[in-house]
Length: 264
Image (cartoon, rainbow, N blue to C red):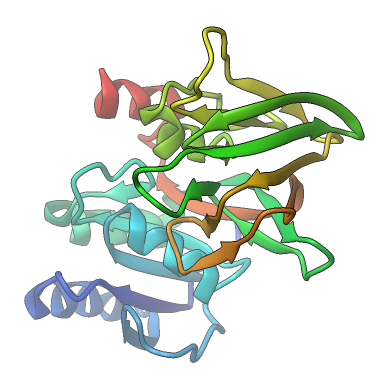
C-alpha cells in the first residue's frame, strides 16, 4: 500500500479485553497515526474516514467490519479460533503496527457475491450466501438454474454459494473445494443432498445462479448475519460482484501459507 497511513479506526469484538484495545491505540499513536474512533462490535455506523481499519476479533468480526466499513482496508488481529482473514496475532500488535506504518502493508482484494431475493435489492456477501431449511426435521426442494438453463431439482438441507475467500469457511465444512483467493469465480455447494450423485459446482464471473425454493420454507443468510425468510416459490439470484473486500496483511503472508497453517 503506497499511501501513508495517517488515520485509523479500531473495531473491537466484545470478547476482547480492554487492555488489548489500549495497546493498539498506544501503538498507533506512537507512530503518529490518528485514531478516528474505537468502536465496539455492534455499535451503529460512525466515522469511516480512515486509511485502515484494525479489527480486534475473529473472522466473524472481520465480516461485520466489511459491512460497517465498505471499501476500507481491514487488518485483523486474531482473537478467534481460525483467524484465516487476520493479518497478525495479539502478541505481534506493536511490531505489526510498526511494520505497517513503515510501508509493510500489503492489500489483497477478494470479490464479493451479489445476492437478491425476487425483485428486491441486490446485497453483497464477502464469504457466502446460505439457503438453509427452516425446520430441522424437514428437507427442502430447490430448483437450480445457471444463466437461464435449468440443471437440477435437489432435495437437500440447503445450498451454499461461496466466494474464493468464503471457500475456506462454511463451504469447506460441507465438502466444497478450496479456491485460490485471486480466482474470478464462485462455488455452489449443496448441503446434505438426498441424491446418490452430487458435486460442488465452480461458476464463472459472468454466470448467474437462480435457486428456486419449490417446497417448504427456508431462510437466507449472508455471511452468517440476520436471516431472511423464504417461502415456496421464492427465487434467490446470485452472481459474482464487482465489489470487493480489501484485506490487509503484512509482507510475511501468502494465501497458501495461510491455508497450510490453518487447515493442514
